[in-house]
Image 1 (cartoon, rainbow, N blue to C red):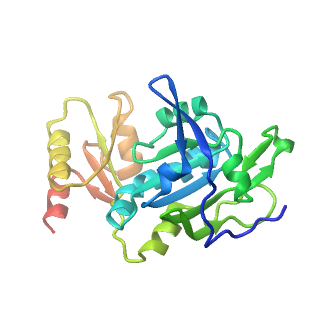
Image 2: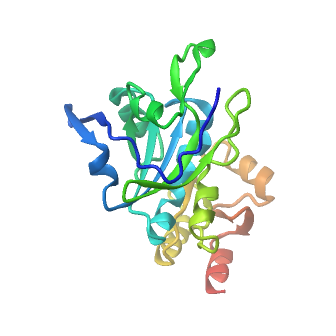
Length: 244
């Protein structure tokens, strides 16, 4: 298998067969890429482990930062049909990403990224890569190394963002453990919202809450807040953290 770098080339002129509101819609390469700056990442298949657990979610998480740094849209391409891609979008954190079906593999083949995965029962699929496209011309590519398996080393969102702006401020990763009917939990969520911070809420069941929190934080009361891997503490501790 020979993978070729395609920097400096125009993106292939193909038609993508998509589904919108239960109707077929043809979208052209020209519509997607003309007069825009687009980040594209391509992967072997919807619903596959690395694609679902890491590749797509991280691009979605960093999408607002990409947009702040001159990117108009982020496109995920896979050699799957429109029905599969639409269902995958519903299943994933993908609200900031356009999931584009390259059902016949035409786009991938024109770029030299269509590979044979019949040994896995996949047939022809796309190799994993990412690219920055400006006004239809490929400026930069990050193509995974040509080794057996499904390497995932360079086509990730952080690598692409670092290329675009190595000093870009990435969003904080915030997890908030809560319990039902907790006024302090509600205050913590309000404080995070007022600070403009996005977070993931993890509501804990009454039967196991104290054991889970005790095992993770050493404290059995809710809420408990983690920011970028650091245990901040309860709602009062969060207020102090936000106050600087």
